[in-house]
Image 1 (cartoon, rainbow, N blue to C red):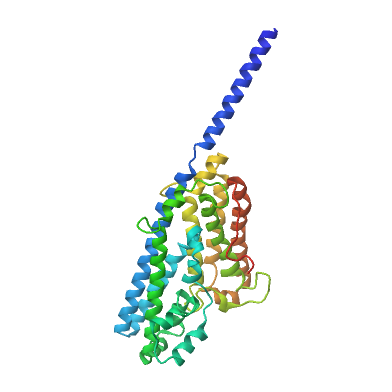
Image 2: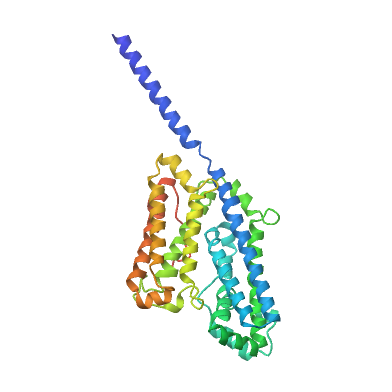
Length: 360
């Protein structure tokens, strides 16, 4: 009898050890390195290449407008600005590691702009030169500055201003060239022909705060937090102060704040689910063995889209006339942020580091 009991115990222990080994093997079989490789190839590099193409198209539109200062060409340039701005929203989540160390986001799209600086330069400078533009703050010559120049008034009034001021057209030209050069600089950091940060990110097997996946995850989290705090919360009087400040909205003059916000959330969806390759959803499933958490992420993203859709045509009007709907959008952004900051952070053993809004 004792022999039988011992035999049963040995068999039980053997089966338990085998099951545990199988579970560990299943968890370890997911390759984070392959995930990062897939994201770099299918999301990061493609998005950056598209951004570079759109800034080149914007620059070409500015050159055409400079040669033929017509309302039609101005409208075309406005369209190209919007396309480039939307493309940059698809890139912002990848403001990580060496890119962030180079402060490129603060150069490419700081807002609100310094409109007085631009107008003072145009009024008080005998001519607009490259040296003059080089010495300006990025706020006076990058995305937001171009937006101000292109959208500050209605098309007819704006076009007349350009027609009557060659300096204004030249300022537009130099600012467009500056933005194009920044997009190329960003591309060079990631490119295999230049900085090759993409390859180094893939090869980075670290598991701490500087590990590739931790950096990648934090980039997405930072985008969500920026949407909640800077794009919606502060202009809407929903972050530490009940005072609204519509002029601090992103894309104030072009009235495309909501379009850009939606584009940024689309980039969260694209990178999380990465439809053509490995995504964060695959990593989560490999650990939890269920789609429950991934379904929650999708539901929170869809709730943000819905909150955007019910708002008036632009965020400035919404803050003034539909503050409760703006508050709902703010809440939905926060719900997605919490899923990343709590549920996903715990599941994936992530360390949330600083965001662009820390200490702001």
